[in-house]
Image (cartoon, rainbow, N blue to C red; front, side, top):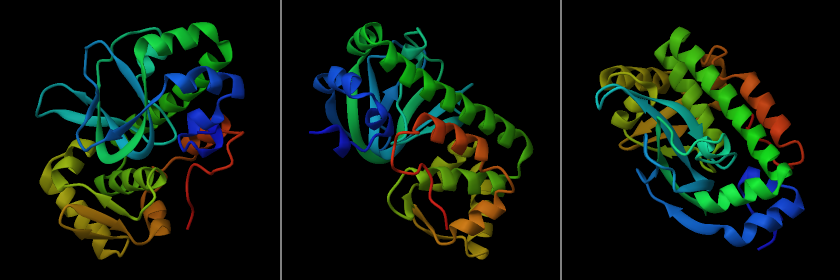
Length: 243
């Protein structure tokens, strides 16, 4: 399977020699909803490179107090702690929208990082872009209204899927946004009233992307998009859609 046919942006952005190094080590995987990819404070056994679907990085103080801090789709990978020299993460990562991708064992990732400095550099560039996303999420969660945060989250997920339909529940959204379910219901109803989305049982459909961008009031950050463009400068596909 040639590199050009891979849909994960990191794998496509690798130098040919680095791709040849890791390709025999990759295994295809189906990623079902709620599949745990990284357990909090436990040794990371595998890293995943999604091609479809979306994963959430979730921080938790307790079962009742948890919030999404990062989103990973076909632009990225899980298990960045390994790239940064750690074998555990304080946060958990699991699939919120089903898909598929590639996995690589932690020992094999470590061997590839040790063998190729350019492979390490590519993954570290992605680690930086993910840090930009984390800092932006922290800023937005502190200063943006709930409907603005919801608009940003929907836009970020829309960037990472191939459909206007996003399958998830209000309960799941409450965890993603770190708020109570009634607040999510009200925010969804407001976006639907404005014609930006349509809500059905277990799913939301994007109807007016440009309207969501405007509603986000700057929460959907250009800084994040710029960081991804720099990471994937050799990649022919845009990270986000317009219109």
